[in-house]
Length: 142
Image (cartoon, rainbow, N blue to C red; front, side):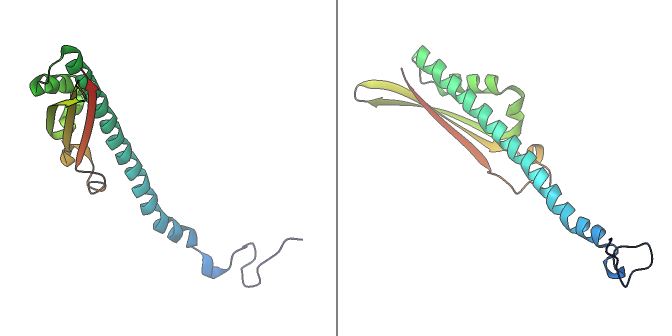
């Protein structure tokens, strides 16, 4: 037997006081869902840039170790070439080659710092999320 509402009009299953509750709930939940989706996209973009920066720094370190040089200019050139169009997402890109020597083993450490250009990188809704700088350090024996 179907349960009916005592204060409803015939043919309705919901009381009069609950009309429009779905619209109110949707209005409350929609902004939260939109922010979660935009935040996820923003996080993905930051993670992608971090991955590309790490790969470029790794290649620059490997190239410097094989060439047995600690030239910051050469390392910067390799990083910029490897990043390609992603270089535009960095407001400033700093590449530093640091020679190291430990226990008679010479090595080179490349440190790459990208200051994120928020105007090109993110929307106004998610501009406050995430880091201002990404820094990657890679060391390799020569």
